[in-house]
Image (cartoon, rainbow, N blue to C red):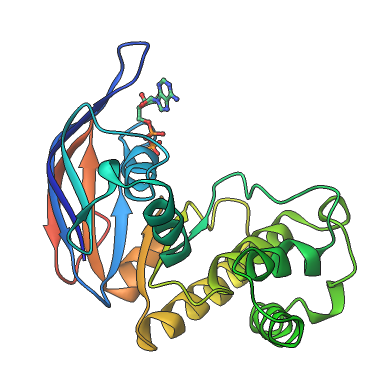
Length: 225
Ligand code: ADP
């Protein structure tokens, strides 16, 4: 479903974030991407949804090379991939409901469908009481859950989550993981970049470890170490 073939990425300042990465992610995989800060996890995720481009190698999504996609196909790629960004990227002047429903508006859905699906997504993440709040009125954990609702509301094929547990206390972390696990059981492919060894060790999912831009471990039911 997602394939990296000999992918390297060096940023403009000369930092080599990824070096000759080969990786295959299958439909319905649940994969933890682990490794120290600066290892290249975020860069790998950005290459999947084409926010960054590789300097060498190719990245494929469903057999299409993502860097060669023109506008309509790039739009489709972004529709197929829901992203929970590390910094959430919520619209500050939009309410919780609007932050989520906007995704469906962009997809051109009818008003009734937008309302039903946005409400269901916000219910799923436990935010039905906060729909009229603005991001600045929420805790870090709540903003995180808005970001998750926004990522899942269009029923994407893949959800990418970059350090989704970083700002969240342990109880909420488990809640977040349960939602991702449930979505995965319903067929969504999930990739989570994380430092959280407890979560990784408990869930026994596929674990891909990156160190200095290289994949140094890929275990089917792995642990953090
Ligand atoms: P991780 O997510 O594992 O912490 P990143 O992919 O964010 O790692 O970063 C990998 C390396 O690339 C780090 O050395 C980081 O400083 C560098 N890097 C990331 N983004 C940029 C950027 N936009 N410009 C320059 N260097 C960057």
